[in-house]
Image (tube, rainbow, N blue to C red):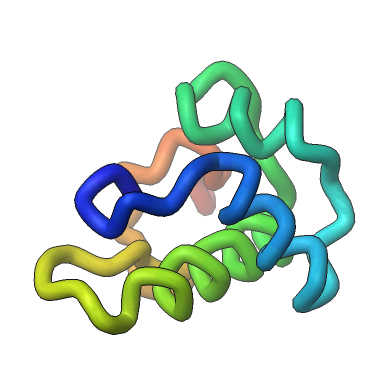
Length: 78
């Protein structure tokens, strides 16, 4: 988001507009790895980030189904 020059506030507003349900402070905490979000909310946030930065070259935010078992916010399956 830094490379695309998108602020956390702009990201949150777009995310909220597409159905996101957590507040701006929670999004900020999630981006700083201080808080985990439910999978649906992480995916909506990834969608917002990808749509806002679609004009920029570079990495895109992954969706939950694209993450491997190394994702600390997903419990290990038995």
